[in-house]
Length: 186
Length: 186
DNA sequence: CACCCGTTCGACTGATCAGTCAATATATTC
DNA sequence: GAATATATTGACTGATCAGTCGAACGGGTG
Image 1 (tube, rainbow over the protein chains, first blue to last red):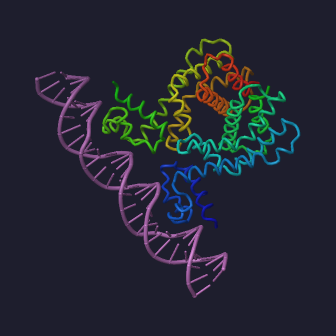
Image 2 (cartoon, helix red, strand yellow; image 1 turned 180 degrees about the vertical axis):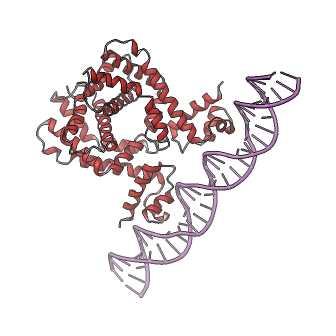
Image 3 (cartoon, protein in one colour; image 1 turned 45 degrees about the vertical axis):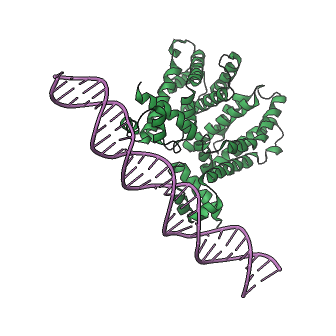
């Protein structure tokens, strides 16, 4: 019965459904079964709520994606593992993924917040750097490789969600993984 | 001195800068050097303006991208040509591209509008179908291939803009094109 | 029990803004 | 050039909504 948690959950759903401006804080509070005052006790402003949701989603995504990746020995297996974890996260936390998709580039997310989010990607940058040094992947701008991989992963996820593909469909998972891998491999 | 044109231009810029809700129609009118009444004469509601902008940008992108593509004989050249046209469009009409990026998934764009936009992609679907039949590209869901290509093209463009890469940098253009091609080729 | 402090409550307010409307100007048609 | 249609103007309004505030609750500490 953590009220803050309930507020976040309701907020993500309503924002996804109706966008930031067509979702009054009053509605969020109502949906969360909470008074307006409570919402503004936990989050100073509506914008703070939004930015806080962004970071919370990003953390959720990253921690889930990395789970167990360090146990894989081969570089390719490591990447594949992360990719599969990511897909699983998207299936389990579809609302969070859709929040990113709709609002990732929104001006409502402060630059500072986006920056903070990017910092959490440090691990992935390291991973790409490793791959580049070991000559598994293209020798080009790391930022570019990260941008492309992220874009493909999101496009893949979106396709899985939109077309209700099950991640048990090993063949298709592998195929979509290849679209990712082929665009960054050497 | 087409006032409707001026309104659209001002609207795109301000929406990009501040988002839909933090851009009052009054500000758009002011920036466009036009009275509020004029804005609402040309567009029944703010939402109609937004949806109209979406379609206008999409058309601009598509017509520019296809220019001269039918003159290329080889399949790969055709695709490359379209990719380069697209990049050029993004350089010339950066505001329009950024509008897509920020609002492409927004709930403010009606489903009907997104659908209309998707219909304009018919040509690309045909092109992918052709490539699949001639066994140049992967034999999988066309919708998936379209989703992935679109995602990569947007990621590439974004990188070009963010890092002020010039499209005269032939090597990098080719490299980013390969990221696209490798993810869909057979 | 008395004190504190973090939490919850929701009626209220001040500001903002989409859209109206009636007057006026400009363009088009016959 | 009269008549009709279309474009432009901006002060105004009614509704909406983010955020406030003072009251109450509860549970931990001494």
